[in-house]
Image (cartoon, rainbow, N blue to C red; front, side):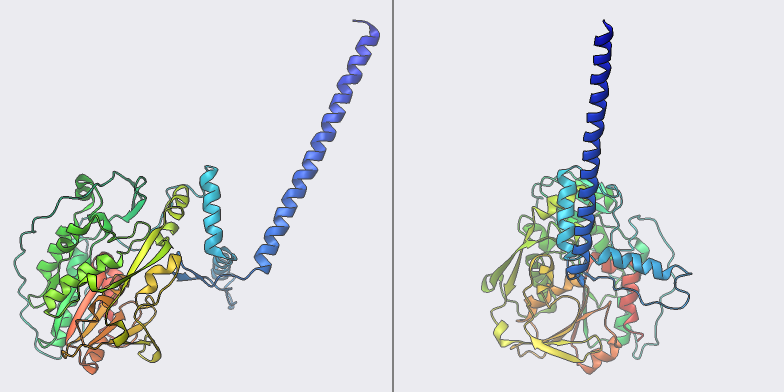
Length: 465
């Protein structure tokens, strides 16, 4: 190679490096510009647009900006609350989370890993025995009833299960991807179930023999939509129901709704994206209760069905990040039923201290993620339904959110229906029962209400206020 060729090659190489450096510089400037633009846009979005006050997916009020108290910075409480507020203070929070979930899903991204699921229950999935603190009681005002436990009855024969899918267990959830169904894995120990029965037996002692008392524990969807080997591995809820029943006072009627629901598992009786049953499932449970209470009951064919589309329930907040978009793209259809005598009823909504707030209907249609609050408007109120029935029967239902869907199907069964959430009611329940001249008391809870210590103690605390 000649001298001139060597010089020319060096010049071309130097020119290439200069051109490449200029190109990289332009790319870097462009990237910085885009990042700054996205940051400014995000800042404007965060500041300018209205903040949500409540998350319908998570069924909770979002964190407000914390009030400063002396020493709160040093003990970390202020910064902890501030961090929660910043996480919640996203405009259109539920919609924003939906969009983020879809982006992560389509790009194969996982935020925080798929093993960071926390179910909002202090439930113990083990079947080991545990020791609980003594139950707090008050002196009974009347003589107690016979507390001899009845003999456990043989579980009735069941119908064959419909098609069930193998799923994946993920920290308290069982996820079936083909049918797009998420379910809670049931738990509970004998100690907690016995404590539930003990609390109800105390109610019998406090109230005497003149009031009918019932216990209706709603099973979770896991009982009906999992293979038999999976069901036995994690705990058959029939066994739990039988154990609770065996520990109850013989005068308390246990409403076992599993046999009533089993023939209808091919129907839409449970949500796929939420831990609740659907109103149709609650209907079959209410029918079973009406038989035990010996009251009239209206067939579902006389009701008018109404549909709410795009119901994506609470599981959206607890499934792995990679599965969120699957739920949002496969929402439930929430079907509720208007009673034929609905126009003849009056529904009063009270505060938790039983002060009248407003009068309306016991069905309050809601949209999308909040669809389940259609029954009784959710858990926020003490509800009194006055019907056109004239049989002298007055029902008080002490319930969690599972009980909300039961009450609308009893408007043809009782003269008056009172609905109280044991987690919120502020008055002494024994005094309340006597003041309202209640004839029938029903504990209508989901499985968690009968197997979780904090819930059971909340039911007991109503007698101690």
